[in-house]
Length: 114
Image (cartoon, rainbow, N blue to C red; front, side, top):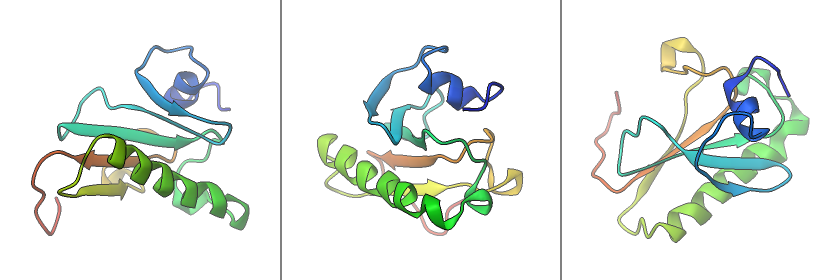
């Protein structure tokens, strides 16, 4: 845990949030500024800033983020489709320096994004 990290504080329940999934490796919560009807953030409990900081030991948790996202999408009946996104670095729109996966659904998406 990083004492200065917003998402680490959410994981430790020091900051209130609507946590919708948690296990020993991963936690997920509703985004406070949703960009779609469903907008969930999924985070590893281990603190690292982005994929650039991930190591081979992080491979399993990064994969697990996607599997949990698929599980939550099924629970939310996102049958028409959904999007998962990692933003890596400020230039890609990452605003919190803790790796997190966005799960977005419930509306039509365009390609290319942003």
